[in-house]
Each structure stands twice: as C-alpha cells, then as structure tokens.
Image (cartoon, rainbow, N blue to C red; front, side, top):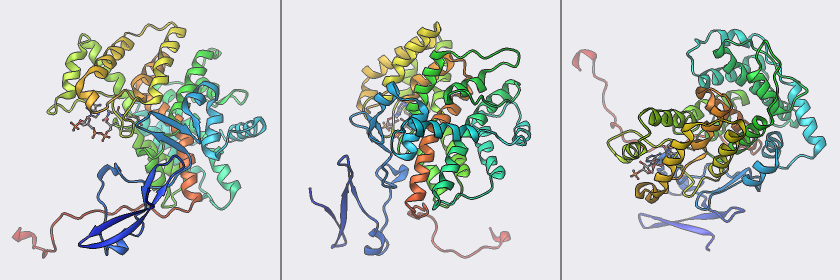
Length: 428
Ligand code: CMC
C-alpha cells in the first residue's frame, strides 16, 4: 500500500501521510489539511470516521468482534485475571507481578477515606435523585477536598492521583446507593480484596455481619473487567477532551460519568431492563416490540442492540450471556426476564432489518440481568458500569496528558446567517 493519500481540490493536489497502526489499521494524517488547503476542513458528525488520537491501550476490531486490553484478549482476562490486575494493566501498560499488585492495592486502600463533609453534600440530594447525577456531582466535589493540581511531569504525583481516585470512587458508589436506601454510610474493610470490599460497602446491613458470596465476587469481577475500557467511546472521549484543557482528573472523570449516563451509552443497561420489564408486563409479545423497533415513525429502539463499532457480535456480550446463565443458576434465581431477553435476541438475530444493519446484542443486553440477580437496584446499573470503566478513563486520561496532547477543539462548518445589522427592539 502507498504511504501517502492524495487529495485534489480545485485542480490542486495535496499529499497526506498514511500511518499504519500495530494492527495494520490505516489512518490518513490530516494535521496539515487546513494550512495546505487554505482553510478546508473535514465534516464528520458523530466522528464516525475520525481518529482523535493514537492510543496504545485498547484494540478493538468491530468487524471481527475482537477486544484486547494492552494486547491481552478480553476472553482470557475475564477468565483468568481479577479487576485490580486489569486496572493496573490498563493504567501502567503491563500486568503487575505479585509485589507490584500488593503495593498498588495497599496504596489504593490507604487513599480510601472520603472527607466526612462529602456526606453533607450527599444529604442535600433528594432521595429521588438519579444515582448517576449524584455520583458525577460527588466525584466533581472531590476536587474541593483534594485541591492540588496533578503535576503530570511528576511520576509520583501521577501515581498518587491514580490511587486516590481508585480508593475513593468505590466509597462514593456505595454511599450513592446506601443513601437512597436510607442505610448508614460506612467505609470499607482494608482486609478485603477490591471487589469484595465494594460488595461489603454496598450491601452490609447495620445489624448483621456481611457474609461474602464467592459467586457474587466472581460475577462482579468479571463484569467490571468487561467494562474496564473500550477505546474512544463517548465517555472516554469526554474524559480526554475535558482533561485536554488541563482540568484535573476528578473533574474529567466527573464529566465522563455524565457522558456515560445517556441511554445510547452506559445508560442502556438500565434502559434494557426497563424495556424487558415492559415487554413482560405487556404479555411478553416480543414481536410487537420488534415491529416498533423497525418502525421509523416510532422512536422506540431495541435497547442493548447495535453498536457504533461492532458490526459483529460484541465479544463482551458473548461472555456476559454465559455468565448470566451461570450466575443466576448458582444464585438459584429464576428470572422470567431472562427468557424474554433470549426470545428477543433469537428473533433479532433472524430478522432481516437487524441482520442487514448488523445489529447484535451489546455488552448492556445481559449485564442488567446479572446485576438484578445480584440484588443491585436498576438505577444503579450505570453506576456499576462507571465503576468498571474507571481504570479505562484513568488510563486514557494519563496517556493523553503524558503525550502532551493539545487541547481538544474541533472545527465546524458554519451554516447560519451572514453578517446583518442590529435591529432596534421596537422595529422587530
Ligand atoms: N434498534 C433499532 N434500530 C437500530 C438500533 C436499535 N437498537 N440501533 C441502530 N438501529 C438502526 C438505526 O435506526 C439505523 O437504521 P437506518 O440505517 O435505517 O437509518 C441503523 O441501525 C444504524 O444506526 P445508527 O443510529 O446510525 O448507528 P450509531 O452507530 O449511530 O448508533 C448505537 C449506535 C449504539 C447508539 C445504536 O445502535 C443504539 O441506539 N442502540 C441502542 C442503545 C444501546 O444499546 N446502547 C449501548 C451501546 S454498548 C455500551 C456502550 O459502550 O455504551
């Protein structure tokens, strides 16, 4: 393949380098486009064709259904690694040895105290507040209690900010849920593993000991790993672009949480469960909902289906579907919603509309069913997604800052009014 692309505008030819990534993906480097063409820009709503950065963190091949973190397949990591190991891998680039992992965990635990005044902020939210709004606000509020800016040229400073947010975030997650349930806000237990600690902080009742259930630990570990990174998705791009203005890590993560909240992104896991419930309540007529999803005059979409990048099975969905069967079986939960989901999936996979558009179940289609089996309230599902995505956001933010990327600032094609004279209000 040639290593340049030629663009001809008004008879003038311009050359642009073609860059090949380590997995042989090719990108046209248009950094000089505006200067050599004297102002021509690209137009790509939704950035469907635009690479915003070079990244060495996650590789995704949407046609083949491949997802790898730092070169390791998602299938292998989900089976053999734990969430903290995967977090270390994403953030620092290599799997940790036992000493590195232990130190990482100890440093995170040492940073797991959240200032008690954060409880006052939490108190001010009505019980009806959506947990994602609360989590985003509390994460942003952490800035007030940790005001020093991260010096990206200091390895120590960078490391400290990483362990600080990994320590405090699960506490905020647990407090967000417990506050809504009227339960006392507690801290974790330093003796426990990262995921065990999350479970205990979320579910411990004030009047009884919390008994760990290995099925829940294993299920949550797997779900968090599967959500840990997904290259330049909407929330990760948000984290990178907010961070590119040199806003701090907590502020950037808080913005990422807001981006994740939407039903077309992480909020889909809540939307899927609500949709499955509605179908069940409506007598389980999946055909009716398939027809609605295909009707262009109906805003209804089959939640948990389709993906911007995967045009084949989402590899995460494959793992989660098997896990859903195992976890519900192990927990002895017989959830009729699972049958609705399987029925809907079968129909969609055989339906011409879905086949033609390559719409397959995505990561969110089955994850909510597992969360529900674990006793997690529906409006907390996207919060769990955020907990899983945290190391990915951190890794992407660090990569962007360490590479000294310029501030993110896209161009536009202006299609508004030309210059006109101001009209006095009485003459309008
Ligand atoms: N139900 C019905 N039709 C759909 C769906 C769906 N879930 N998804 C896409 N389509 C149709 C869409 O109407 C369009 O049809 P046409 O070509 O006739 O106009 C075609 O498929 C392409 O869709 P698009 O909206 O142009 O694709 P996109 O890449 O902009 O959107 C998506 C991707 C994920 C936002 C979309 O598939 C969707 O809304 N899915 C449901 C929400 C969902 O499950 N989101 C979770 C994504 S995975 C978790 C994450 O990483 O956030």
